[in-house]
Length: 244
Image (cartoon, rainbow, N blue to C red):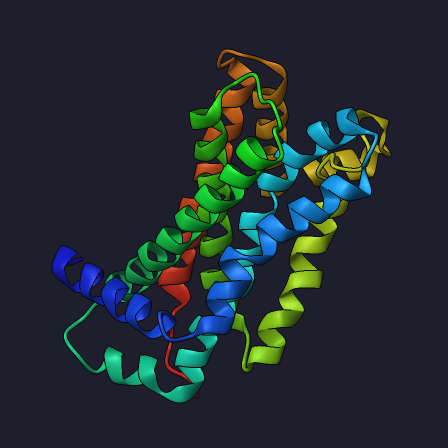
């Protein structure tokens, strides 16, 4: 793996996305706008909004980066860009980690914007502080990026890449603890949620919201989210192939 080639790949991807205004708007504008809308949905129920908003900050980056990463990567496969790159002296790991760095940087900017809106404009209080909140949200974006890169290997069109969102993300969204505490779910759903990464991203946000200090549960959640992301990235590197 070459650091120079990895960062060159990241620079190329960011350069292409810079001219894609619709994608940038989807990444940077939609999440904070949704938070603002939700604030007024729960007008008069500030406690409910203050408990939900941090969890959404752990969900939005994953969903957005999963969607954008899988579509953009698939687009490069179908257009032949990936094939041309693979004829050059560059390894699969250089490509996949280059993509990951580029999309994670976009995820970082998204988190800074959404987090700034949530903590500043909407005055949501998290006892764990701003830094811990941002770290969890960035890890969530990293997780979405890694899963998007992995699943793009199994899609043959951009439409198929989008289909992975309801098939892979929505079941996690239902059992992650956003709508009801996991202990109140059926045992089978509890077991399913225990092996899904989004569960730990949401739980980490709950820990930061409720506790002012880092505890064992928060550290466990961060390790699990990061571990899932790294494994997905490695698998994505192993499954990258030419478009047939």
